[in-house]
Length: 328
Ligand code: SAM
Ligand code: DTB
Ligand code: SF4
Image (cartoon, rainbow, N blue to C red; front, side, top):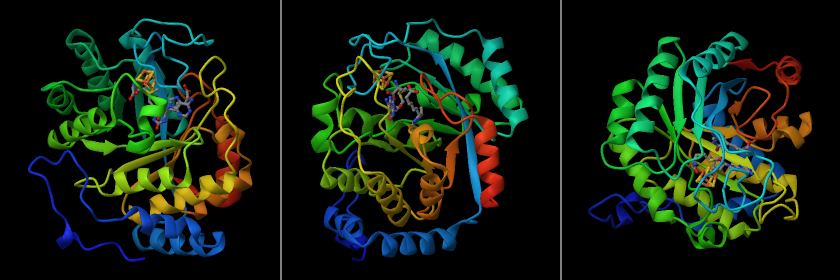
């Protein structure tokens, strides 16, 4: 179950494809371990690279909600589905800065601004650049998730002081077309290349519980781990079922399968921050603690994600105190 040798890799001229470092069979073998053995191994890897009692906290804000042209089957913000999420305009700068200040005061180290776009138009990007500059000036790390980037846009974000760009692969390349038809997995990889080339930290992960197989989950982890450089930040989202979307009534995944996915991410991407992302509100404190034990060391902090709820700050603060965890 060792990682395959880097020397065996055949690399294309353009780093659009992944480098063969982990094989899907390697990661499937991890998933197949007894849960306690898997967690033990993940925790060992975790302790080699991180303080096991420290968790990074990012606060999310949806700066442009709803009305998205894309058809992502899980998303409340797609214009194609009848959901409770109304279409809104891009938020004014002063409201964004006020929200970032409030998040900083509550103890978040990073502020992540999300937009329901296929990708930003240049004039919209200019307004987001102002947001990045002002949030950065507060002394917070900055992150945006704006969809697919065109040439030159990542460089502008870098110049404005952007620390992280979130752009998830979301699911295995093989399964992608069953969930999203308006863009491709290769489109996502192309944006990740642009972000990487501009010198911005990459935040990329996925959603589990969308009806994918265990093999699909293992393949997603492999596609992330085998990027030319693994993402610095890897959000693992549990599907939040949204009424009105095609995945609204999807059967719930066994929570231990979620824990296994966290552990697989930790083992294959030892130096990445693995984020226990969407779906925490429905998780018990004990399940979240198990995710931390499996190597998750980052989370979204604040009462809202983008359009759905997240645990109250008071509940998270109490959980940190009970577990002896410090925020970073
Ligand atoms: N439009 C941009 C994009 O697609 O990259 C940025 C915003 S999009 C809402 C950001 C991410 O949120 C998606 O890639 C997906 O991983 C996550 N997400 C959206 N809806 C979700 C849901 N119902 N459950 C879990 N994660 C979700
Ligand atoms: C990520 O991986 N998860 C966040 C963030 N990146 C942008 C978004 C979760 C969204 C959950 C559903 C919602 O609130 O709309
Ligand atoms: Fe649009 Fe992003 Fe939602 Fe897809 S996930 S519909 S691109 S906001």
